Amino acid sequence: MTPPVVAAFKWREPGYRKSFGPRHVHNLRDGIERHYGKPHRFVCITDDAEALDCESFPLWPDLADVPNPTKGRPSCFRRLKLFEPEMQASLGVAPGQRLIWIDLDAVVVGDLAPLWDRPEDLVIWRDQAYRPGGPVSPYNGSMLLLRGGAHPEVWGDFDAAAIRAAGLRGSDQAWLALALGPDMPVWDKQHGVLWSRRVAAGLPRGARIVFFCGTEDPSTARAPWARAAWR
Image (cartoon, rainbow, N blue to C red; front, side, top):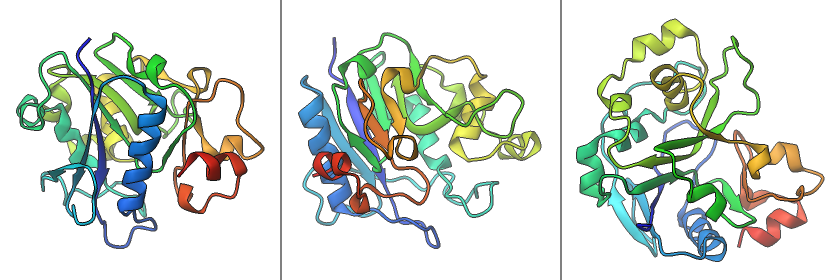
């Protein structure tokens, strides 16, 4: 099996309540090294590579000016360009090769192989707040696995007006829901992919990765398990 490319994004968005620095990048890289014991390539896609001790790739400007239709939330539309085959080639992702994008607010606590060695063309984290017919997308864009060349329509057919018309919350994850439908392969809590607010009292058995979504940040986490794992 061809080793995957693991891509993390780091950019500064004026006015957003969270910011990430080199420490977030390095701690995520190190957590992946500890818990994915197979060959892989880690790269940070960024508008500021200063002080990074890892491979970096320049962030593109495409869709940077398209705002999140949910007021006060960050706009993450630009990372949808990873669905474009030409961009995948520029990043060194071959057709059929696994490309994993992952947020910097992740804390890795268990073996990632069962998550990242899946055979599907696309797998995405299912949002724990999703209810059919509601405004929350069935997906959370914090982690996604994509095979090179799969689903190019996600980029090619992008339509910001359709997201506003649908009334879905979020940016890239709202478009993923519209472009792909609600029935794509997912990870959820049964796979050990968790939201930090749901594990404040302690990690459940089988936990593999925890995301500090929203205002939370692993660098300020007080839970002993988080402080031990995010290092």
